[in-house]
Amino acid sequence: MSTSSNRMPLIDALKALAAMLVLLNHFSSYGPLAELSREAFPALFNWFFEYGRMAVQIFLVIAGFLAARGLSREGQALAGSPFPLLWKRYLRLAIPYLAALGLAIAAAAVANQWLDDDFVPGRATLGQWLAHAFLLHGILGIEALSAGVWYIAIDFQLFALMALLLWGGRRRLIAPALVLAVATLSLFWFNRDAALDNWAIYFFGSYGLGAAAWWASDRRQMSAWLGVIATVAIAALVVDFRLRIALALSIALILGFSRRTGLLERWPDVRPLAFLGQISYSVFLVHFPVLLLANGLFARFDLSSTNAAIGCMLLAIAASLGVATLFYRWIESPAASQRITSACGGLFGKQRDLLGKLPGLTTRLLTRFVGRA
Image (cartoon, rainbow, N blue to C red; front, side, top):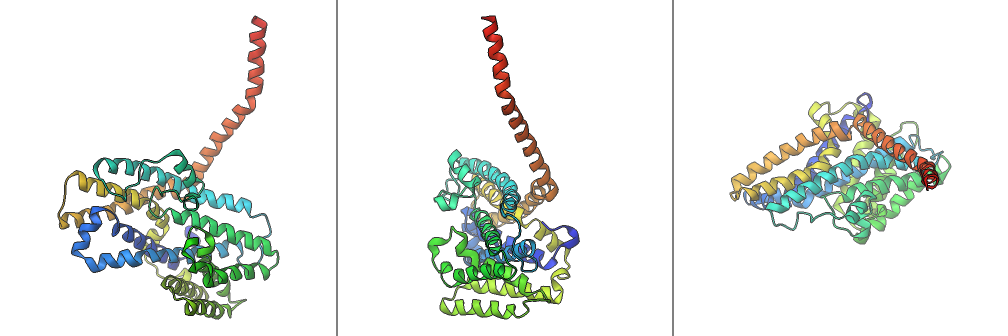
């Protein structure tokens, strides 16, 4: 998370838009609230259902853009080992993610008492939780405990793949060339095979477009690469048109041109958008538990009218933003995350110290026991 001194308002605005579209996609897809509300606004709800999920492309491009900024700001190879960076990235994603899984498990347990619907996850098992904790649930084909959690696993895979490519390049120009070569392979081949959608390689075309936009937007170098990006992506669309790739290309070009012109750091200067962008990951994580409870309460009180469904949905959207605000403050924010990491580290340290003392304690206890005997 960027600090306030170097925030990029345009990225905040795009993240805010993407988070709300994902939220509205899920709210228009699951439970009696969606079914009844669609009767009043069929065209609107069908649009959110069909196209809201494409907002994930915005997150993918932004993630690639920021990864290039953090790992290879000037197109250089990654000098040190990538594994400490991967652990840091895992903690950044996993601390709020695992907390949100706890909320989703609790919300599902409550909703299951009142609502019989396939969208409510069943009772979580230890194996299921471990698969989610290690970000392997999609690869192993295990039922998701919350909507959208596949993206967290993909985000980590994408960051890991990019870090390894930049590390493997070992030279200034070869490293980004490897990233762009793999992104090109993804755009032309891997992204066309839906069977690969649990793997980073399926999404790396969009991620690579974001990285390329960062490198190409540097005025001192690679200034012609924006044209190269567009040419490669358009050629991939000619081979097989995919609206999601067209959207990813548009976002990459917007980011590239806005950085070159300076708009990235200046526009739009709208505080609510900046705040919503800041808490967008929290919105992404907590809105589904809120949706589960909202649908459960709707069924619990035996409500059935369209107007009641619309009112409950609006309240659930507002509640999602409120819960996300608190979740960001207590769990996701850098300060809160650091506190949690430190607390966990202290706990594990005490356990490690205790385990280290066990042999000595055991020896002393045996000595006393033998002596008394």
